[in-house]
Length: 283
Image (tube, rainbow, N blue to C red):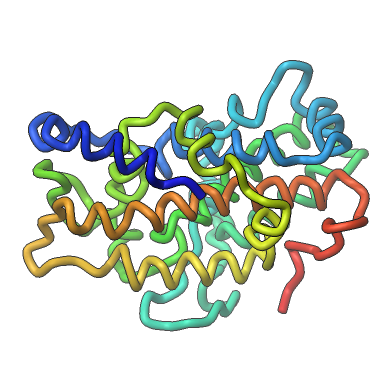
């Protein structure tokens, strides 16, 4: 993974950011989700690419649908809980009956929702519209689950209730991890994806893809406890917090992209070679 390019950009713009930095309110940020999707697009198998084209349509890329689930969140209120899982911050395990209770109006947690959308996206007797909807949500939710605060519950709405300043500007902890740390690098989506995913060996890619949805959620949950919630007493997040958190965000974006590719390959390509472990498997 290449973080040096990102670090150089960050240092070059730091003084500007301290004076005029603003934070959009998106999950991973719109750019972050497209970075995850771009990495996946570049690492899926040809068979997977063909199947995705049949569902999404010619010329529709993973990047172009990566933020669909956020765009329709208010229209489809039953998808509200799809974006996160409430694993208690101070615990180290996932218990579905505790952490993924289906809400009658807001729906299932991210782990339950992904299994539902997987089954719908591959089901040939469903309408193409329903399969398209499900696939768009998968692209987005795999990105969401790699944002650490989407997998940790500290009774603060994933850090949204934690008021902070970040590089001199008022914000909240969730927004800092959604978009603040990403945008502070000053890179374009293409530059960011290239800096993260270029020159990786086949073994490095395979290592990034290992695991299951549950182990990935628990991994993100641990990062939330060890990094996101490791706050100074005054909640003023300056360069030290940014420099410590940036590599975590970078690696989670890279993992998200590679693992999205793996999920899509499992759904749409032959289970041969490196594509033999089911990422939806339960422990």
